[in-house]
Image 1 (cartoon, rainbow, N blue to C red):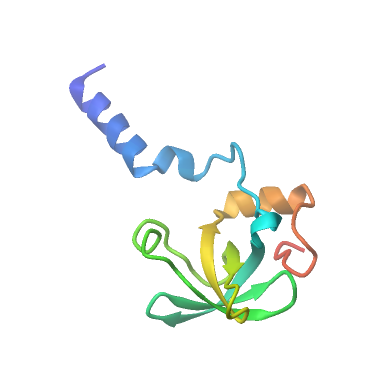
Image 2: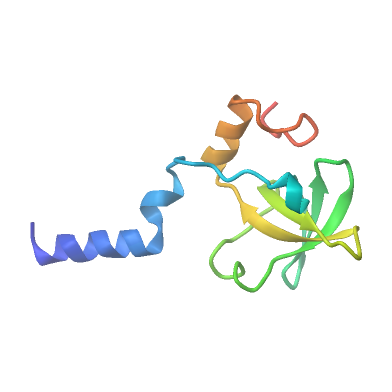
Length: 119
């Protein structure tokens, strides 16, 4: 194994390319904290988006600073959102699922029917 091979494997690990498509343990919303599944309906710009939540409401969600550059979010992505306590029509994005993670949740019937985009 040459030095170039070692350097490339370290770069792949640091960039998260190996873990992006692996399923491993899938994060689920913590219902005790008020988190829920949502589907991104529309990107509104300035780190804001419109999310259809599993309780049937459409909320204006924002992408927190810790996620802005690390996790790119597009329309029709499955996300976990946490509604604000003082303004329930707004929410924060907690996590974004990859396509393989979302299909895994759908196949194992972990998604509510309102949110299941694979049916």
